[in-house]
Image (cartoon, rainbow over all chains, first blue to last red; front, side, top):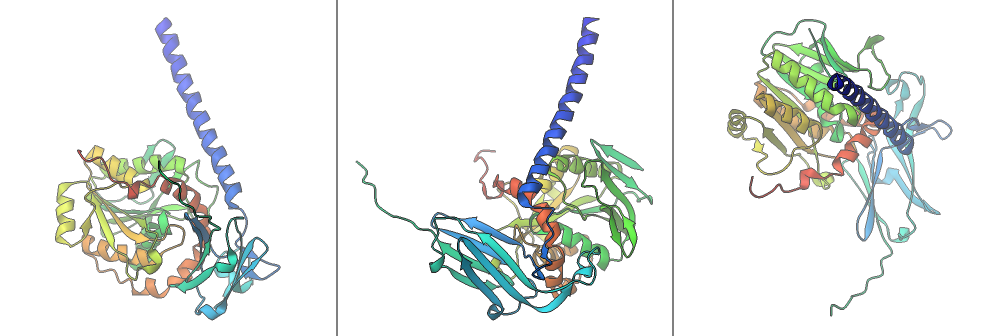
Length: 154
Length: 252
């Protein structure tokens, strides 16, 4: 009898545990969505520009910012500037894109520029940044302010 | 036929014949698998035969030409079944997804499961034509890859959804090949998808013309920005574990 009661409890416990696990997963998902701004549309109606995908990679002595810019043809069509702690990237597309073909809800919106603002960390030297544009990807390399000195090994 | 594992179900709306070759591509690094499978469906003019569903998927219904569709669908033509997903699969569901696909494949006595995907490399910007690597569960598939001149993963880890499908196949002795192309992690990569499709064509004996995909590359990259952004948290969380770049134990 005791055994039966115990096995039912275990079963209930594992169901409860599974429910909790799924709830935790859901909470994490919602948190990730908030952090990554997943709900925000990737265009700016006021400025009439699209937000490109961008990524920041941190290395020991520099940070590397990459931005995916489909439909941008030449490096002359890209403007990279620094304003305060922000890296501002603007680029002109070689043709305008109708948003109805991208997402059906927003009709008759057309865009021909990208704009992306990336907050830079404090320890970088934007004045020494170099950029290149290759295979439709913009890459901006910004060195970090690194104080180098040797530590003597005794 | 309905197959259910955990919270995931595969529903055949039209019966799929026995012994199919199953090709899967879910949103992953560079959306390589997702781009490759959706191009394949269009190129081979495949017919929709079913869908995969879970209560825990994002609450969306997809519309194409005014017609509603399930976000994860199954297409078929001449014994080739393609599973495509238009939504990012949450990390918590990937295991159930892998299990339900392999379980269904076992019941259908599938000839083989082929998983398509990207293998993120930091220097992708320098690579003109991405290399493709194959990881096979069974010996005869490794021989096939060798014969076709596809480089085999000899030492290393397979990771993420490809690993889970391959692991389930290993347990059930289902033939499985993972075809992975060098790709961007965080940007849609039609170039990598084209590279993977060329090798897939060799394996399944179908000539897949990837020229139109390469010509539409910019449009694909632009259209898939939002899906990429949604899929990225899962991909990044898994990629941070960095198993692809890890050397396994020496004495296995």
